Length: 77
Image 1 (cartoon, rainbow, N blue to C red):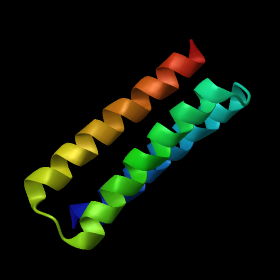
Image 2 (cartoon, rainbow, N blue to C red):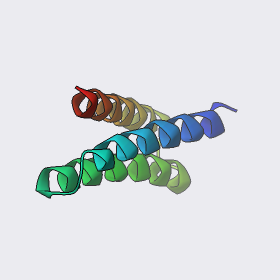
Image 3 (tube, rainbow, N blue to C red):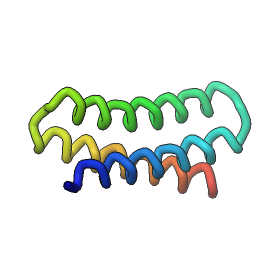
Image 4 (cartoon, rainbow, N blue to C red):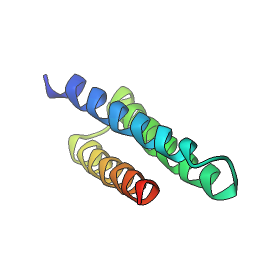
């Protein structure tokens, strides 16, 4: 029951991070930040679809959320 909620949460936080990164303009640094953001969000979704174990999926969710929140904070400051 929590899996759809985590997918929505991760996708929303990831899209906010992508929006804030792209709001800063385009360049090499923005491209790397956007790649990290998209790779982590898609990695979590792919891990769930592939049926990987719960512990790996949970840690991937935590890493993805922390990294995306840090990207949001970095680009807003």
